[in-house]
Image (cartoon, rainbow, N blue to C red):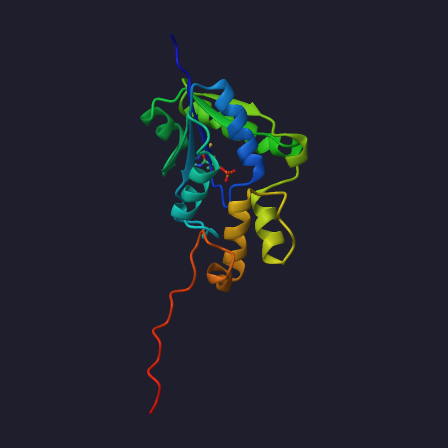
Length: 185
Ligand code: PNS
């Protein structure tokens, strides 16, 4: 029996509901799906690779055949290293097509054995991108329907680190208790 393993490469800074939608669709057609976060030292991301990995792991915990990894260098080389035969990418609108086509054809030139598979996320996510989510969050807009709750919380914490220790956020714990000061006598 042939098992088809795919990688879903990207920056995921941060992961969005659109990414999650695509992961869910990909997990249904591939036997194994590796969400592969690019470690790109040239970019200065909002979230570190470790933070993105943690968020994606939490988001995909319910999918048995999905794992989360990081990579650097060429996508095609990483795909060959993990013995994947396909690259999954999402196309939201015509505007994505040109860039995605260019990338798919370049990847095919570099590694003819690797196929790129395009899938479309649900229409309701067709306008959602990590860049816009970052921008809206940075300007104080609501991103609640655009990202999973965990990512929303992490974004709010990035914008206002004091929230990390706010009441009602047990996931992060509270600020370490200060030692009681000795009363001055
Ligand atoms: O989510 P993004 O940022 O659109 O993902 C782009 C990504 C990571 C898939 C692309 O930049 C990539 O594949 N980078 C790895 C380097 C590489 O292989 N470059 C040639 C691509 S044709």
